[in-house]
Image (cartoon, rainbow, N blue to C red; front, side, top):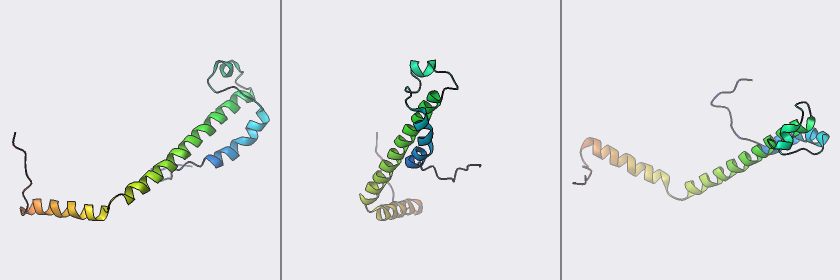
Length: 109
């Protein structure tokens, strides 16, 4: 599958969790990915791969939470001001400056 810049970048932790859970359950316990104990495991050891799947699952959880926080912040910002009125004021000011009916003040140094 080819991704484009228009594809959704939304991460769903629960989908990842459901996908990796069977592999993690089969592996039992595993060391934290990247630790010395993890490095010493054979590359074919299911616990080594489980540690990577667990790390990926945790990364997706963090992304999912960050995306939710970003969406909430966006709603707060949208509600903080009358943005259409602000945009109209800026547009009117720029039009007035372009036609010369308004001359912006300049600070004299």
